[in-house]
Length: 251
Image (cartoon, rainbow, N blue to C red; front, side, top):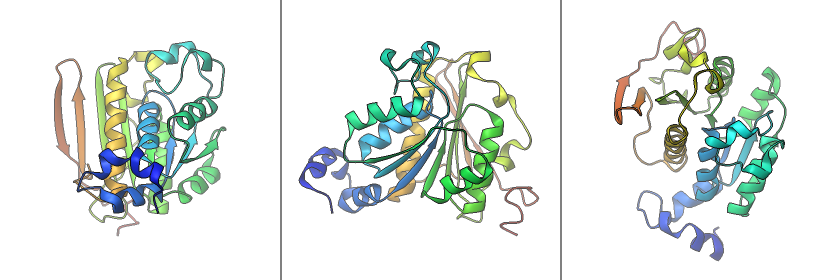
């Protein structure tokens, strides 16, 4: 049940008929893994913590650098040199002491990633490199867990939801195959801060929709964001029956 403090804290979203008490309880009972606590993971973690997701698993092996602070808003100047996980835990605890925070401070290998994905209900990929995205996608397909994937670089962003529980859903590999321009990192190509904030906020929204069960998630759809022209475009994405990651699973 929700205590009086929680009822007051979450009252504005409980007022929504799409959430209500039952939806808030589903959030409280949910476990979510956030892979990466940088530009995307910052708003994801902040909004899901504030929304009352009961258990957030935070995965990042990096430390906070001064160059991160232009966009990674879960961290602050006093966090420079600290583990990103520890920095995020400090901030998220201050925002919402009602939730549980589980730390993954070291790089996740195949076995530990599989265990981390198996322990949660939903995964958000907020990483900044293709190899991590591929590994997270494969782990989610194997475990049958929905994946909310976002990316942002320069002045362009992308967002999609891959849900192996749905036979028609593609996976990340169906869309990107063995590589894409997303292999560039922000340190190489640059990125504007509000763009990663926008993509991360949309990732948090998609996660809440999946956890509570309202709206139409971005399954089978790729949202493209052009920050320079303030334009949004949507592409339909089909599952590849011959995909080396999810094809045999749905055969």
